Image (cartoon, rainbow, N blue to C red; front, top):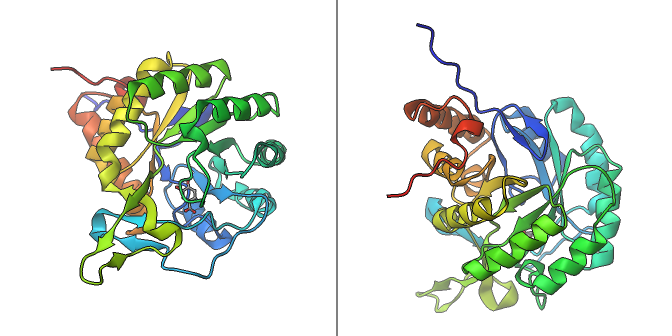
Length: 314
Ligand code: DHB
């Protein structure tokens, strides 16, 4: 008997992906050379760095600190080349033949409207609006404030036909999953990316008796494997609430086929890889994808669609 054909091809907000593992915004995706490397790799999409109206560059530091291979803390202060550069890059990335995802992190509603409008007219396929950047001094995360989130979503209504999504912070309380899900459905958000780094953790060097990160008195975003179970909980909580109407990118501690598979079981349609790409190389996408295929086969699933959300309860 011929083996059942297994595929990790997936669909996010109606856009087709040949496999289901891509890069996460923020990791080695700021310059054109970095984006081309992702284009040449087996990443199923090219996710660009979160953009602002103008280029941002900082000379101070340190802004990142590795916690072994398992993760890191960072406060990069949204360093990026400015949205107009990423609009131009998106044209140069078409030749890789995979979906291109813009990331928008404006410091005001007007800035977000301007950038989303520009990306709507560009050659990107999906627009991820980042409402969870924890690393701007003096700014609260929009995603932790439902009033600010609603004002933003209202302003972003009807700016174009390309699917728009939200990059969400981790939530730790069912009331927040409820209120955010209600807004996501009310404003027809097409996809969510959960989760961003855990904001405002503090790593202390006991021997130097001081912080390890320069800005914000050492407070920084926690990335990597530490996020895995918090990400799983958020994916599942949103999957349970969004009535199958909203696609989900799972991010946070995806490092192999097992950590990818558990996010598919929780309800993700596709995965984004941050720390494991940062600390590894471009081969990570195909490695995870092949291992994920093995996990699908082990459980008798032939596709991501079949496995998605199929978590069992004891
Ligand atoms: C940065 C960090 C984030 O978690 C994010 O979503 C956007 C930007 C940064 O530090 O640059």
